[in-house]
Image (cartoon, rainbow, N blue to C red; front, side, top):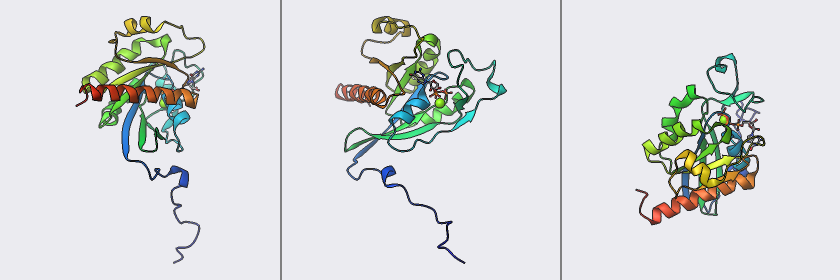
Length: 206
Ligand SMILES: Nc1nc2c(ncn2[C@@H]2O[C@H](COP(=O)(O)OP(=O)(O)OP(=O)(O)O)[C@@H](O)[C@H]2O)c(=O)[nH]1
Ligand SMILES: [Mg+2]
């Protein structure tokens, strides 16, 4: 039998290998309602080709899933997104994006396992879905920052108004972002890392 043929499994691409300087890896989850930009964020910021589990949306979702503001969307995450980013030579983040459609939310439990922190992506046209999302993180004691993904036709609110509307305590960072831009997505992750660091220093992280 010829084992040297074209069927050999290719090794990992050099670009996909973990930097040899990496000393710590941290799991971060990206959560939020349907169509808020979770898959886009993982894709824009990941240094490896992201793993996505998107399926074309079918009639099954119509009338069940709230699609306000996402009319042009044709695909939705059914399991998770996965990506990786090196924040420094030593620190690597593994990013897990959750499905946004409520019928897949049962998968979140596994995705939250071992997560050090979370990014809650918010669309100001649909603030109400964020309550469920943040409630689930609070139940599991996963610290989070709130990132407002600025869709062009979404109403703009001053940060303190948003904080009041979302019922967030003063220490939780809220930042605006455009998840299509790598630098902006990276800024969100840096904000989360700084927040986690401050929690660790204050002894709030167990
Ligand atoms: N204008 C604008 N469009 C965006 C932005 N972020 C995402 N989009 C678009 O919005 C749509 C939804 O993005 P996704 O990344 O699929 O959203 P998602 O949260 O992963 O969606 P689900 O997995 O279905 O919950 C896509 O068509 C994106 O191109 C943004 O900041 N501005
Ligand atoms: Mg998605």
